[in-house]
Length: 632
Image (cartoon, rainbow, N blue to C red):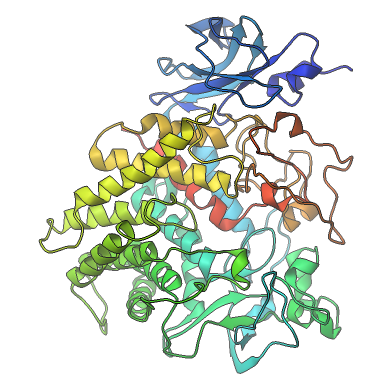
């Protein structure tokens, strides 16, 4: 077998297939900010401890940093029994470099950059914005090589339905039960590789994008010429406002159905570009809910609202007021009124499953106290900004600050405390950060159920749990690779580490903030970035209809830039949908040789558990990039 040198350098071939090499070097493919920690990994079939490594300037071919390969951090697989972390934090000179290792096994890394904090992640932020623009539904789409037409224009007059009784897979019997009204449910982002839209995921995504616009104006706001998320976050807010009828206090929580029945074709049954749906199947009755997608009502007007949705929506509307109070005052006023109204209807004693999507198994969220903490925090912060509209039920920031502290205390003392880190299923990592700042801004008022110190302690508890997990992984990842949602957990952990250090004025978790983000950008066993377009090696065969049908499947443009995929998992899937472009065409598994520790990463369009992207999976990535590019 003939293997090109570039394939070996990128780590696309296992060491056992090479004639001499028995080691590979894994790096952060986007690069390393000059002043921050820097780590790569030698993944070897033999023990390289005691060997030497050099960081070589590509331009001058000279070694600018040398070191000794340390002891292995552990075994990854039967093929790669040794993983050696290489630290070169002391190198701060911007440039392009490679790492070479000599010892029991020799290896050379792919090229990587060291650059200024302000510029290194600029393209990654631009890519993330591009992803959300590609995911836009409705008439206000953004033309691109991947998007040639608007989609789901029929959503502008969507018929409404009650929630059907479904089994765990989402199948229902008979037909849907119409309510008899229509709403404008157009707009919003496609949820994932499918075309469903849900308040559960869109509210979480909008919350994080708005926070980025507010907190990092030079990176994600009006101060950026290439990654200004201000309009995109507004696009998310506008759809959430459509799904909450403030005049009747009615929440609609989902558009489209994932699974149907023998007489009803559903979104997951077909593979197509989104613009095909408005006329799909002509007049065939089985395709009726593809052409005219149902909008599902949470409950009758004025009913209590599932607390996860009430809290996240209230947070989005509170953040909306904070961000658009000056630039779009009418929108901001509408948001704040809606935020207070929906928060007041939150069901604070929920029974049974929370309302997420149908079926619940699609998004099985169980924790909700953190959502109410976040919603109350953002409303309190909004009220403190001043310039309030008329008609608000509450105008005193302390009203919501008290509630935020109550729900923070309920979370900290509740059954889910520190059971997860920042991601779709647990927003405490963000809620605690903003509540700390709100309490500080209010002058540490007496009588609150939590203090800033307690919030910090709980954030540290979550981060220390991730540090303990990292100690069991040779790549130092703070979440198990053999589970769902690995990519988004890496992003969220990096954000939390940066938040904690910012609040404490320390660098307690600086290594982890860089390291965990680096893990999902290529410093992992597979040598692949888990965000499309960020780095040189990333999945080509993602489980996404637009990317699969309108994009290239070989890593060259156009690809779905900025899309964070599920990531490595303990489970992979197979299943072909008619119309799907099979990828890889030859059925090969280019990353399989690097699977280990119970984790697999399969770059195959059929494997939604590893390579399906989603708006919630991507949401924390721009925040992580902004934090690490906004260093003093």
